[in-house]
Length: 513
Image (cartoon, rainbow, N blue to C red; front, side, top):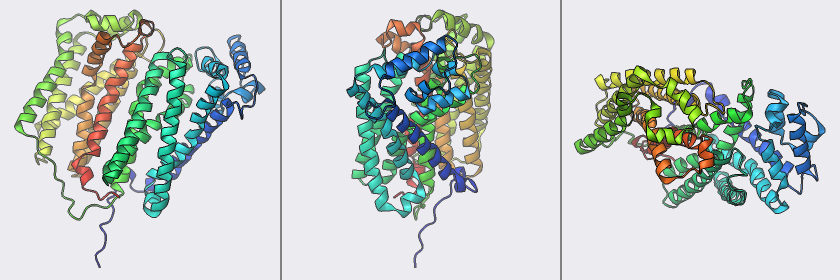
């Protein structure tokens, strides 16, 4: 009798972790789903516990602004979602219910017509369906043991996803930018999430029709990652509320905006990778990486060198970032002054040089791995050393800039995230190489190389937003352009790295079903 090839065990889920990770993940996702359902029932004109929600929420805001702690009062139990009330207990009533937070949005929600409240509340309540069905879809043991149930739950998940995104789109169109919480940046983020879910779930469906289960799983994992922006955002809000100090909710939310899509993409990648590695290896599972041609390598060097010059040129020729016209136009004066005082001088030159070395060395190492050269080379050492230098400078700048606030805008959030990502990807790549997992090393190296382009992408994004006038002047003065440029520059490389992994040679080694 021929025995099936046993599943490959991914070190990310080995040992005792496999015993508790899925129950814990299910608890978190379904727990959030219940909180989302509670938010929907609190707002819905059918199930709301108050008939005058707009007046009650306005009263909560007014009392809070007068210094009265509304935490635990009958008014907040009637009109406020459970998770906001939990945040008030973790921080303070002023943090949760004050005017520099969510409260004005809650007032607007209750001021909407009953039809629009029904649309938004139904979208919220569908969160319970999406989180429960999504968890079951990506639980490897459930997928293997209950194939028919997996398909039925998959249909429910897809229908709920399209319904939820349709309702979200209706709400966004009717509310517009001004009535969306945190205005422009959050409004754009919601549209990115909506489009990301619709495109990912649609691509997953097309892959399923082609019986390409690996790509079906990958696109579904990406789509669920976009949906996980909702629970991750609430987790971030709750966690940061405990350390906010004198900062307001909206100031801490600048940090959440910076990290959210990266968190969601990496969560989706983790789900894909764990499910991929829980599948059996193919009978002939030899890694077959397509080599990079000499022409491709040369084009890569030219493009990366050009990206490096985006930072190296101003670092070598200008006194500070503020001297760059696009930077001075797109970043408000107060945060630009603070940023220029920190990101300046000889350290900026070292940062730009280390970035160039990192990108070129990582590309050389990637070409070597793709061409079958497994031993550690000079490029490998240069990649690690330059990644550490760039990350160290980024984290140093992040520390000097401090936490986000209204006067400093992003402050050190973007640099902190860049530094942490570079260290994480570098360590994961090194670990894979030491384990002899060349395919996984290639995937992590791609993440590292792509993330090294983030600083250049910030300046490029600023230029694109400037020439297209994509950010209205009102929101540009609030720092929305700078936020969007940074968020996009750090998120896009991680997203591309995810998609490259879905279509990678490493994925082809597994018989995914």
